[in-house]
Image 1 (cartoon, each protein chain N blue to C red):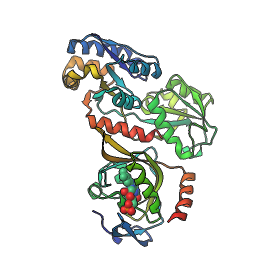
Image 2 (cartoon, helix red, strand yellow):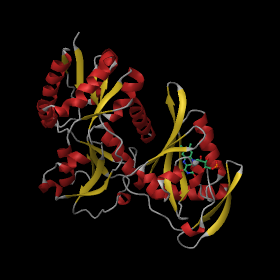
Image 3 (tube, helix red, strand yellow):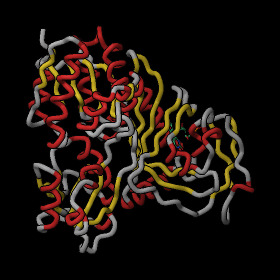
Image 4 (tube, each protein chain N blue to C red):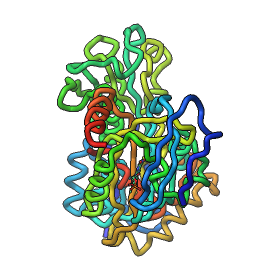
Length: 158
Length: 248
Ligand SMILES: Cc1cc2nc3c(=O)[nH]c(=O)nc-3n(C[C@H](O)[C@H](O)[C@H](O)COP(=O)(O)O)c2cc1C
């Protein structure tokens, strides 16, 4: 389940965009220029079903995304999709993990309040009894130079 | 058949007798002959594991993947309310207030404890630092990591949070913490090897019930543990996957 963002949740001046989610439904998002710094020393962790529906989030995930845990569980990870993120990055993510490999990359995430935060994400398939059971993403604090490189690259892709 | 028990070489030296007492208690409770073999370093312990010379291990989370996925170990318990956290400290008088100010070529003191090192290196990454552009200063103990900082032989040190907190007030007053991890899901655990698995549930129950017995509570105290809690197979697998994401 994924809904349009709500204007009343947004903090600060915002712009509007429409995102295609799962290449099918359209989601209206509002986004601001307000960055929330990555919390030092923490990891942001979530797990999803093989098709990307969130089944577990840790406290840092809840705090950074601005959503309540109940809003996140059962939603697709695309609930964090920022309009500045190129589709190619997520295609690469899905292609990699569906081959059973680890994916690593820099991601700009959209908060419920329209703000954003950058992470260095590592997504791995969770293999149990030889079968794909789920995917887990572990995010850590990125370096500023890596974020700037990613911004540069993504602006040429989107 | 004598079963072989070993403990991750990063245990605090003052817990040494505690582990022997725990082993004696375990032998009495299980009626098994169990030999406690302590290795000086992680590599010799890993060699013993590879040679099939370990049946029970209080394992560092870094080695859990190898133990569970390559050697068929299964989790029994972890110490209640414990997690392996690390921190980065510098000299108190240093002008550095943020990890991001550390520059390539910085001398970083640390010990060979693999989980703490891994978490510490993750916390240096925001400064674009990695094993290829720091100057490592190897130390045999955390007290020596602190000494390297105080003597100016290293600019930054990686400590396990708990060991840092236990440094003397005098030493701590001359250091400052730049960043402390708050991961909370990485921990040591007691694991059972293939020869012990027929009795796994029984041993797990014995351990969990230790804090219901006054004498056993004393043994736990000598290990500085408040008790044991069960670790489910999936919780162990999850921790292993998480360590795997941090390893790259
Ligand atoms: C475990 C896992 C974690 C993910 N985390 C994020 C995330 O934090 N932010 C994000 O925008 N997409 C994340 N994705 C990718 C989304 O599933 C999705 O592909 C992306 O948001 C683009 O949306 P779309 O595929 O609907 O176009 C994650 C995927 C997986 C499998």
